[in-house]
Amino acid sequence: MSWIAILAIIIGIWLAIKVVGAAFKLVLWLAVFGVGYWLLAPHFGLPQIF
Image (cartoon, rainbow, N blue to C red; front, side, top):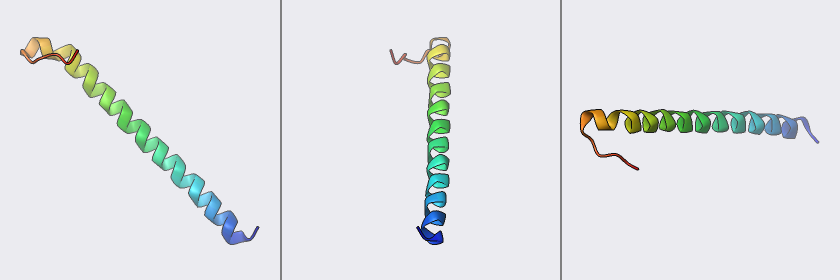
């Protein structure tokens, strides 16, 4: 393999890790907002999702 291919593989792995991290962070924030709404909706008179 040439050094350009090795560099491309390393950059691809680094970008994949960044994408997975961003997706994980997005899922965590959605879970936080979902649980917060589920817990606070009855107190504010909002309809519950489930």
